[in-house]
Image (cartoon, rainbow, N blue to C red):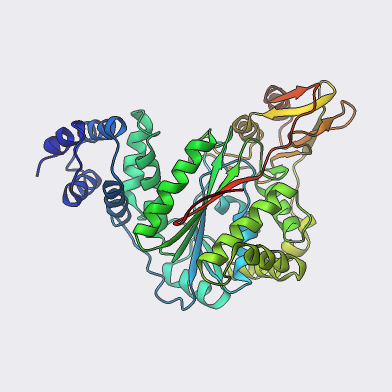
Length: 441
């Protein structure tokens, strides 16, 4: 078998066989296929696309290129949740404890943040002593006994995807649906959960900017998961403004704790209830969506979700007192209130730019080696459609360097638009996707 022939075949729009796709993935991962040939193949895929069967073969080949967690020691149904990335997205810290307190085994492998998108692992490390470097056996034992564990991604999880994505990033081959879906799903399948719930973001702060593209990506990934034998669901949610109010590690952890007390913004609570309901449906804890939402709400009302977060923090070496007394968390040395430059309605937010504001303040990483300031970030106090008063702050910026505050304020003001005319508030959830189809909400 030759890579030349595989490139030629795909260039002419022909479907590749399973063996050919495995040859390509394995050859590139072990270094026998060079970058220039893989680049040519990826560009051919961008022009000619891949069939449903080809995409499944690509996904499975990348998933099997490294460690495959089996979670065989866990007796309950296991579930995992994945977000395609966003600003202020702290839903794992809320949804995980919710569904774990209802009997779902939440086995979550998460990554760190890079660029404007925050990572769940970084947020959890806001708790002093919290460990994410769990061995596989330790991870499974905690999920079995406690019902929830969150660990960092193993170095050998879907290594083919890491190598292929790095090449896609520099060859303008990132934005192809089959390649995006297989990249995400290869890691989720390798992580081993029975049920996978995907939170597919749409809008100015998301990878997919249009609702049409976001729904198409959700459908593609749900199909892949189901074809691979996993119970897979997706939720298409808004990212035309930050989720909740807080952006930044400790600030988001505090907001997640507020959510577990039922005191968070409506968009964040709705997103969490819908995601939790899908996880409960997928694992058979409930039989319909409304029942799932009601069950999720009950975990907030009775305090069981908050208790589960505290138990997870303690089990992984963190101090659970911070869950019940979030005022223990350190705060940034400087805070700056940002006021609207005119009266009017908040009309639009360049959400990705708000993420960059948090990066400037110190809350994100420009490179993998960058140090994060856990106390840095911002809290927006307005949502699209709200009436803004120049005498009242619409955001507060937090940093440990006054110059960063000045730079961040300039970017923040450019990222928002104010209208004299009333503006319709945005929906929080647009659709749910399952093997049965798309349901618009």
